[in-house]
Image (cartoon, rainbow, N blue to C red):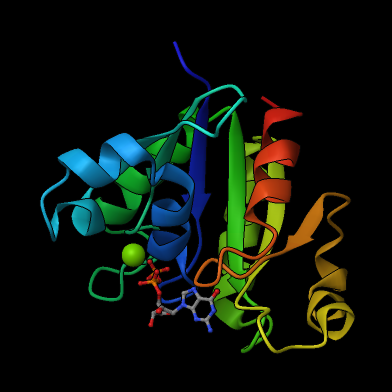
Length: 163
Ligand code: GDP
Ligand code: MG
């Protein structure tokens, strides 16, 4: 079985964009129909010359309609609880929010190995963007831009070092 990596975070931080950046492969591009990749929850990252790993986009972790206790959120939590590594995705432009704090509190309870992924760092002062999340106390932190594929290879390497 492939190691499972779960993308967890509040809506709009770029989880699905990161999912697409990680799971996009030549095969996927050839075989997927337009519009399908976007909505898919599970995928496989096959980085060239490196180990493959499964990725789940837990889009509903903080579903706006149901809140943190809704059925969609519960399903997302179950996926995260099974993961070998959780990528806690936050928005470097908006900085830490109350909802991020809530998700972090829940993540600490699951006690899964977790890396903090500060997304949307394109055009930002990277250190300032990371500093905003320093109080979360992660030792494993990385700034990326999923939309521009910046630092995604480094994220993959650091993910594979932990799964
Ligand atoms: P999700 O709700 O967490 O799945 O977030 P999405 O992947 O749907 O992205 C939400 C919005 O953020 C979209 O408009 C994306 O284009 C945008 N976005 C995602 N990643 C980045 C990034 O690295 N940089 C910038 N500037 N925008 C991004
Ligand atoms: Mg999404």
